[in-house]
Image (tube, rainbow, N blue to C red; front, side, top):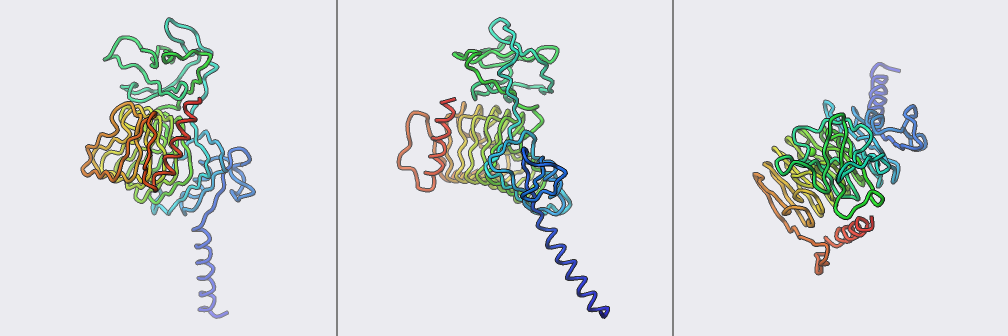
Length: 350
Ligand SMILES: [Ca+2]
């Protein structure tokens, strides 16, 4: 083979290798997977951390096992060129909560002390988010500026890493489901790189956010995700993040700020999204540029928005209530409204 011919053949081989390498495809299954496997469909890896490591440099697609429950966060850190990454959730859930219903609980005055240590850093203002969920209601620490002791539906931290909870009005220990969210520093999905698309993924019971995006993250897209029962926000964009969110549900999150809180120089759009039942606003924007297209909001504990954005565009935000069904909804909002109705029914049956 001549020098040039062999060089040509070599180039073709290199190009093919590059093309193959650029399409890393990895399957992850928390039940059937093993991190020692190669990540193919029949031989998935077990952890999100391992799956991401396989995509981190070259980019590619990660398939989560359909409807699987993951108990570890998905942390997407940056790489030099931030090759595109697609996460296909297939209706899987990342749930960082721990069911502590069984306690043991020691009666203490009007409350109960959880008889195991709860080791966590709660920060200077632990009342700003929720650390526990009781029957899907956010329970946050009481704020000492407004009283000396917690009220029903609040908690307090005691010396020795103990936690004392006052059950909400009308709830007994025997009919309560009590979930401890993860430490306030952990989010279900943390994005620290550009070119990330996530589809069909549910997030629950983070100590911090369902989806937390930090830094100079360009071209982030979330499609059909849900962010519920997170101690802080459901979705929160910081820094210079540019993100588009479509067809997604943000509900029952514990931040004093909002179900969504996008800050700094972030530029975000939410299209056909709903933000309901949150402890704070539905949407909290501070600086940056933000657009809401055809969104449903309602049943949040405080008014639905706080928009101190540099630029804020409201393209058809509709407020909903629990008792008055909406009629004459625009066609494009009907599937979302249907999902909201199903969600409200599920929450009230809990
Ligand atoms: Ca947060």
